[in-house]
Length: 158
Image 1 (cartoon, rainbow, N blue to C red):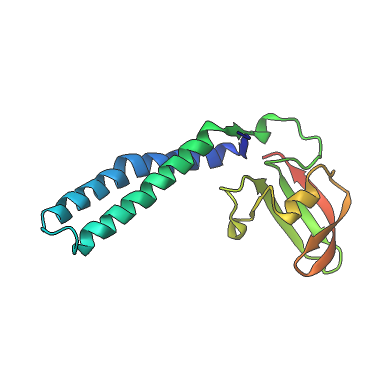
Image 2 (spheres, rainbow, N blue to C red; image 1 turned 90 degrees about the vertical axis):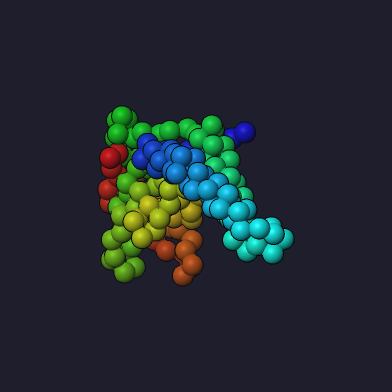
């Protein structure tokens, strides 16, 4: 199976979610199933069926996280020398050459991506257009609004 690239923070967040699901959520669901069983006829017991469905979702998420963590490749850019090259985990500031708008993004794994927090997936069009480029380079990236020209103004290994 392919390695799943992830930052140190992203791997820690997945481990926390896994612990929550296993040691808090799973026992709560088991208790809810037990209580629903005591109510009688399981065929027409909505609480029982809802709890069983929630259990299935929880178990699927646990398997998903365990699979990712078993194949994780943690990349810690803070331990690397800043060469000015855009790689996974770097924080990149780009300047839109048409609008003069500046944006800063951190390139992270798919599970960590959160555009509101300026965390973009390594598989996103912007990240793919930036990976391998150097600070000071101009790049053209296909965006929903068409081809856009950017200048990489800063690359940080933080």
